Image 1 (cartoon, rainbow, N blue to C red):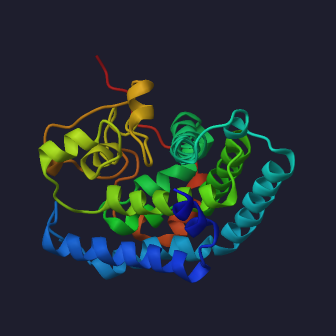
Image 2: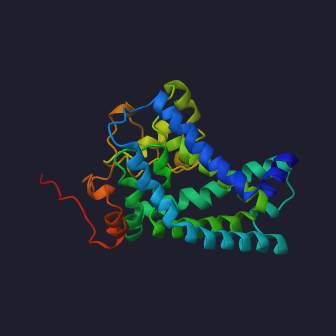
Image 3: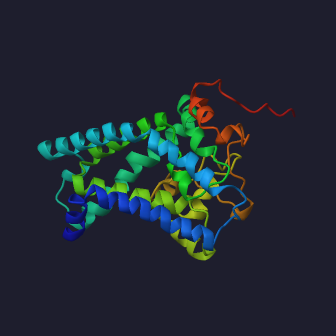
Length: 277
């Protein structure tokens, strides 16, 4: 465990980029070999749109990184946070740290975005992807990135995480973003078993179904345990019948126009007409 913590404490920026690009490449290859859905869309154009959002948020991420480092330094100076309240073995520190960081830094803000209308309008951009694949995990509005960075900083302060734990969390989180969005077939029995603890492709694909109650469920990032605890799990009999998107934003031309996607949070809120009895 000391070696793991040492590795992430001293991880170079080039290594982090290698993990990110390597993960994307690995799952892109799997998508070609064992796709859940046949690719009846231009994957290069689709990837270009999603990657553009990551490029747009690079400056925001830089400021976010500064905030995270200041939070880590605050923990170090003050010995603050839940993980520093009692003496625990390093292996337990890392496991509890991952689980708690996942809740405060990812699950909680994800749930809030689905339940606060003005925040949901930013999150719509992620859900508007009609062809969910490994690059969909990169599709986030800059405004949403601000929310996510703020909650990551909050998670660091609440848990008392050190730098190594934060780097470990962000690396594992990036892997699961690739894994859970990847357009790949999985072994049903294995996927179902793993989904009691971890977020698997089949578990997360339900969250991207365009209709309720599926959209407002399965919020997990790394661990699915929070959805089981808070009873926000829904299932889908056959993931190959899932239709991706958001019921109020199903126009594929709109959802492939970057300018329109950036403006959605500032447009009038769309709601479906109420059904007559």
